[in-house]
Length: 135
Image 1 (cartoon, rainbow, N blue to C red):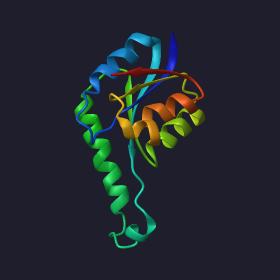
Image 2 (image 1 turned 90 degrees about the horizontal axis):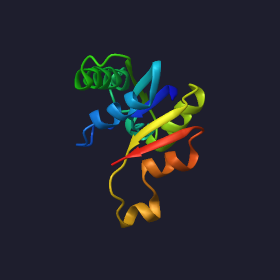
Image 3 (image 1 turned 180 degrees about the vertical axis):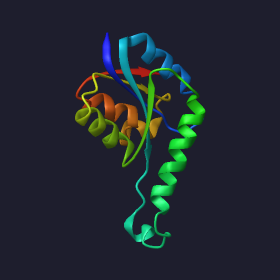
């Protein structure tokens, strides 16, 4: 069905990302590209100025290694770490990388989600492609 699927992975949450990846594999055409994406929250400039030089890049490398180790050797799955606000970064990545489907996990919405909106809700509202939400 889809040729270029994005699966956002939140390493800081205790969700099992394998379910989203299994769904992505079912939705994928033969030879499709699946990208597991982790978004590293941006560090405010007033904090970043006190970090050692190269610390942010080192954090990104560590997260990339952790993402690869948690996903193991899943055939056809590329891993990527970028920085930004999760909801915006997922939509931007999908827009600039010709993604045709996003498989995003969501929690059961709480009261604050109705006022502030969750990452999954933001992706559903603004994505330039199909979005499959899992629970």
